[in-house]
View 1 (cartoon, rainbow, N blue to C red):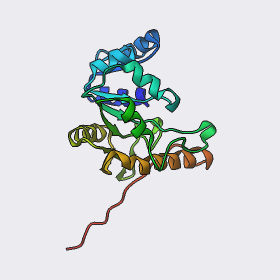
View 2: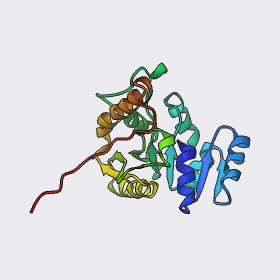
View 3: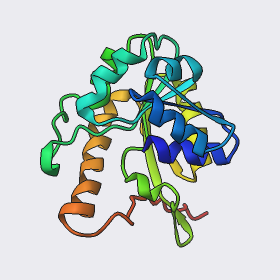
Length: 202
């Protein structure tokens, strides 16, 4: 997901630093994307960016945040899903959410949940006929949400603001539904959710 997001944002002239535990491979990755991409440690990437994207397995989320260092004042986009082994459901949900846990770990960051309700392979094909796939964002900082909304529009999403961070308790299960349909029910990854609204007649 981090690679896919980075590639699209690079294509529309954002500057990207990829963070990794493996400096050799991340530098190779960055070089393959051209001069506006760079690579470094998690801490170097976090220091570089005004916006930091957390795109790691849930099992590595806390460790990765600790490795990133000081995130105070940073906008932190969480696109992780706390999925149990063998796609067996959510490990965290309903009375709290994965992103609320992340907000506790990333002290001082402006945490926004986004880009987590479809697979990375779908990011380059968000149009379904005349419709754009919806993504659902939530967070407690309005300015940070506005910036993340624009980043989502840049990706090609129909961006839906669903309110405060605790409403990730609703969107993270929606992500699990996408996983269930795509993999366990055999529908494949070329699917997305769409919020439809009916125009009011005059």
